[in-house]
Length: 336
Ligand SMILES: NC(=O)c1ccc[n+]([C@@H]2O[C@H](COP(=O)([O-])OP(=O)(O)OC[C@H]3O[C@@H](n4cnc5c(N)ncnc54)[C@H](O)[C@@H]3O)[C@@H](O)[C@H]2O)c1
Ligand SMILES: O=C(O)C[C@H](O)C(=O)O
Image (cartoon, rainbow, N blue to C red; front, side, top):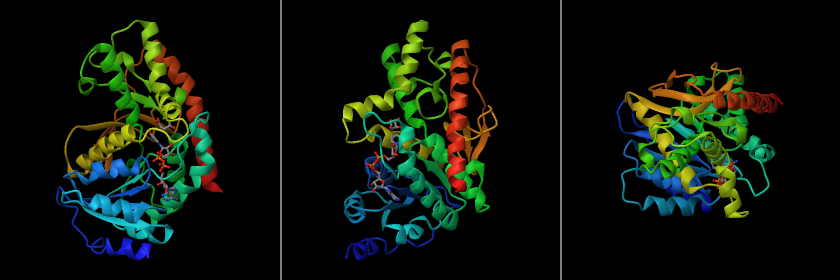
């Protein structure tokens, strides 16, 4: 019955659109009915670059689709529920955003989610390989540092891996840094330009405060305090939510910003830049986040390491072994 309802709402989902036009991209959200997936889908429903939004989850899809479909924008909303329907969700999409998987509870590290989420990422990647191997793939699911290498290995095994098209979403770290620096500097957060390099967990999150624009106002103690606040901001939310999840609204906002940048790049817009955790030769870690220029094929250029202060160089030294460990864990899991 439920499945029939979902299918009714997907009647036109298989209609093909040319992606040579500039504003008719198809985007799939995997984990669309979750805490991040729902507000993210709402933001995407309002995005003028999107013609079709495919919502995939293992439960609650009919209700979310019926609700979202009433929003008065042109974006067509289609629902797909359960593993039997994932292929329909991914057929010929341009961008896949993956937020499927469990969030942290207080006391857990992101790495503690590995056991629960690694299989989810593996299964979704297999479907991506089968149905939309050329799509840009943005992974939100934690632990990002490990989930992205898992997806890369699965794609490699099937001979469809293109490192320019696979991204770990770290945009929430940037969004937070802009907010916190805006508060301290007394400026509009939207005017703050900051890069965050490394990965997306604890000490692997390296805010490059020395290059912030406008310059970060504060002595070394203030720099260290701000660095720690940005590194621990996810835990701040997990603690405040007291067992019912982690960041969802700010994450949906950040994921929409990142997805929109991917779409602007695909559309051919110039100078689209985002930091993202991708395969990299910039440091010894084979995956690493640095500022990237986005274009029609995903990554156009990796801008490499920004200039670092002595303090940031020490943060980098500490982060690299952690990221290498996280990457290795993903590679070993994918090989099993
Ligand atoms: N990258 C980041 O900055 C960042 C920020 C916040 C949260 N996260 C991570 O995002 C993930 C999702 O968080 P949330 O708050 O939305 O969690 P949630 O539990 O509210 O939602 C997750 C959704 O995924 C669905 N799901 C589970 N297994 C699935 C599968 N195999 N296929 C399809 N859907 C499946 C669930 O049904 C649920 O609707 C977590 O792993 C969390 O740690 C990452
Ligand atoms: O902290 C978490 O577990 C979720 C996410 O990675 C975040 O940074 O908010």
